[in-house]
Length: 133
Length: 335
Image 1 (cartoon, rainbow over the protein chains, first blue to last red):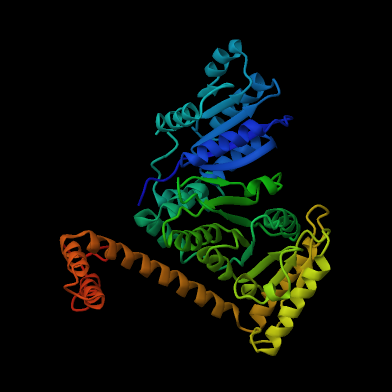
Image 2: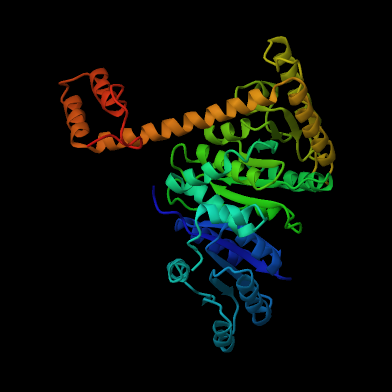
């Protein structure tokens, strides 16, 4: 029996229609052997928590292009923790430099901005997952 | 860490109280196979059997997930607590998968349990994982359990076709009456859906299916009770057809009970799982025998043409299946 693939939920939370980046990340992770549970646009944190539980996912990847990251990414972390789920939240999209420190402080595991290479995406997700197991 | 150390028993105790993540963890154990999957089977086997199992299959992009989303609303409105097993293919090259069925399923109702399962490539894996997952969801109280698979690949078709009720989704413009009479997917349907019925050609698609069913009647290939699968026109954009589909599912369930076919179908399903399980174990034994020194010698002898293929296989079989003794370890040959 080979190793069980890492399972990651990919979603965009709230009112945000820019899913091209997330679809690209989905493909990058698929090609690296991940099982990607793709939720896509207009999700709620409650729904993502339910999906992580049902799918027994190892990580959550959020993509944000609506300038709501300072509100919604910490809310996502908090919702997962209060459901007893210690899975890393990986944030991608447009995040200004000055917001990175407070987001990491709030429990976001990794922030992958524009220009991140496919290799870095794969390595960061893998490290974020394995550092917890 | 996320991979908690709860035992299958602890997980099952939490799962029957409705703990979503415990159910999710049990399903992961089933997917992994091996000893932990066996432990979960042992816990759930006796407690399962109450749920109706519905299979929904059809070509990629035929609208199965969108239709399912509409169907789930009907199922929930009728007072049921459904669960879904959505199977999507793993890449044979990288082992990765994009499990995208949830995108189409309107999941504002988080009481419906949905699990995405990747085929994970290994032979027989899916054929064991899906019945195992059905058992878990059944044992913790979901009913009905709906399995969604792409109608390509023998194993995918088999796991769906072994449901109590199998729905096959077709579309307009995917072939004529000759296509409809080719062997395969269409033969396993208890209910047909012509989905995307707003598209041109949907009446033709319906007619071709009707003609195909007419021929099944004439050649005696229809259901032994003479039941003719209904054809339902559906359009997920409007939600039309979903109520008719649910009514047809209920009608088929009643038909199975009235004609004593339900237990026969379920026995057939158990048999299929048993076959997969045994063939999986035998394949493991074969692989380790071929990897052994003895196996390698036989392969060399065969390549050098010192023994015939028949002799080679007899020698291997006699070591994989030892009829003269009870194997000490059923999962592999003695060394």
